[in-house]
Image (tube, rainbow, N blue to C red; front, side, top):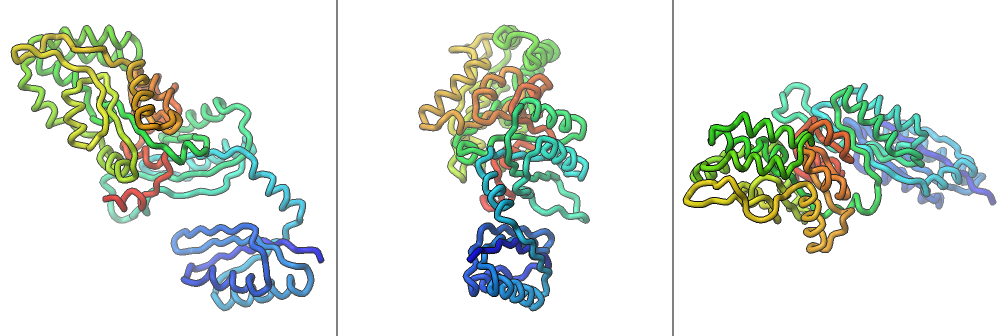
Length: 407
């Protein structure tokens, strides 16, 4: 005897035991569940069950009993018959590539979501699911740190990924929203190492500029720093020039600068969560080990690689010890730590803001430009500019309930 396939859509007020009651009816008639999915928005349930049942009396009876049960539970039930051909076409879609699109902002407006989903639709991609990652927003209480994020799971073939991400970048700039696009593969779900730039990433300052102000050469050093971060001059050359200008600065000022470092919003929440879930963390900085080591103790970072100041007779000599940690060196350290920890490079994340971060951002499995210079944003895989450093957690797919559980 042939079988019938139906899609049962349930909507109404959510209540305990609802799914159990409906599947009990299906079980009584020996129905086979082919797919099931459920979402709750503002205590309103949307439940879908795709099931197969023997044609004839059983088919008619199960529909009647499901309608009766829905009436009893005070919910709405709708049945859609599905042809075998349509079902098999749907099954065939499961071999398609899967991707994750994450939308981030202080608040998300309908226009932002509309423009993103329009790009997905134009490329004939299916949205399998939409998930809110941030907690519910009060309309009467002002949030000290507003943030909103949703995650879209999409499926299909993308012929030109560069063109696809370029459209997201245009929306991001026009509508002040962050849009991250990732392949939904085994590596995305098993990230193990996160490496951070320090200055203007983990902390909201360029330490060398602060030291320069104390040495009375602030404007000179700041101009060189900015030019280096924009990628206009070679980092190594800029580093040597800035170091010479710091000659004679007393060692005593370093501790005072360290304890007053402005840690970036969301950094503690991010690193505490990463540690709780077993991630390794590292600072890979063109700044100085003195301040990297301070942050290592303050935040619980596993590794620090940075430049070492040369100090003689209680003052900076204007020189440094060892090799300069430039962009290429950061990438080398990323590989070195991953190898030591037995982590595949595709399981790594790098976060930074300057041109000297691009080598590690492009090497890592996920490179994130954080409140970065335009050149860096244009050349990185993903970017966060609208919220704090804990936005990284939403790119990893964590919901606020997974994060706040660790508080």
